[in-house]
Image (cartoon, rainbow, N blue to C red; front, side, top):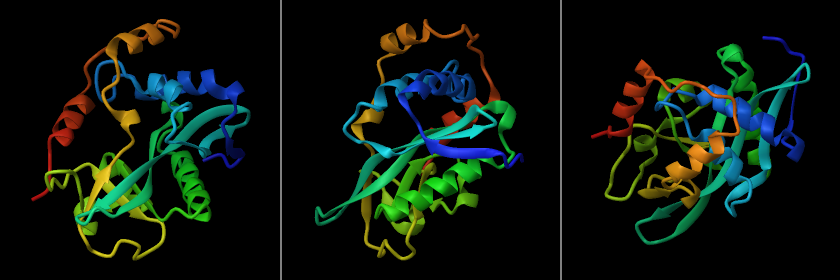
Length: 215
């Protein structure tokens, strides 16, 4: 890992570069093609987007990684709500993956988030990628989806230990992540370099994870 990098907030001048990088990082990983670059484009104007937690990692003048946070919330069985965080899209350019840059970016963002008073993060992600960053199965914190579903990909991290007290919590992401319009994604993608849609084994893994729960 080259330590000659900086982590800073994204600026409007970075938008297109970050969207192009996001497309390259996600293309064909979870589905043929991807929608994450379109999501990156529209989320900056959403009310749940947290501009103070919108970071890029720049290596020798090149943006090679990004992470973006949005507001989520937990609700207990008595209807009490607790605001928490989610992040995504989070990505590193493929040629720089598994070299420590993503770890550095996430750990930096965790510290900033904690300094802002946030104490819990919940995401949907591959446990292989996130348990080393302190995320655990949602079941270990009694955090589930509506219907008492403990989703295999729902991961929780306490920024402040023992924040969650064992009561059952239901997790809700921002409506920003609801179904994205395929037509708008396709139209948006026309302004980017053409990349061929293809099948990869990672897509089957994603398919299985999306339909798996614990217990």
